[in-house]
Length: 259
Image 1 (cartoon, rainbow, N blue to C red):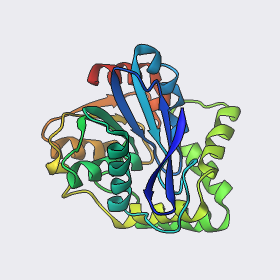
Image 2: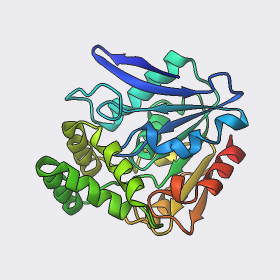
Image 3: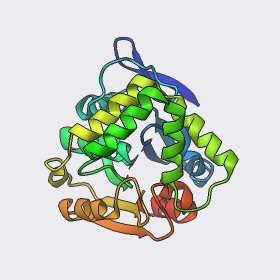
């Protein structure tokens, strides 16, 4: 079922809550500039296995409200904390993809992993996000031809072949975001880093990363692994930046083993 959680006055986040009576809970934080819909191929499988799956659209993205402010790691982590408190979640697995992984890392350090039993980082944008040159190009395209920008992102996102209908679906997902929030998060990925956050994470952490990732290089996953003491790195040999879809069967099996 879908509903909204108010995280501050005038800002409501959309929550997709599938199988609310499931025995174990997994909270999914999507990547930039997507929405909870990117985890469709997890939501197809995991609830039928007894899991409660909660997809959160960040402010500015998907079906959530789209304010002009609040696009920092601290604020986005604060939003997650409000959702966790409102839904009274405890002992859950937190899954973050790409920038969602970065938000999850800030949540873990800022709130001492409040309520989280296990952390899963998927092609996480950590400890850094975009270089200045990449950010400049993406900002220029976002502010002048956002559909073209989204098509370019889609073309570099996956290692495996994607059909034209799949590509169109993926592009439309990205275009559901507001243009200003899309641009603001590019700036966030350029200007903020997570070097000091990583050593503070104590929860068991699974790091999944595609070896062919053109968005966040695999070498960054190795750096994250070395910085988080209680972590395991699993390379996905046939994935780019979309391990959640490209090797979805193995991805889903790993999630079930972690939870």
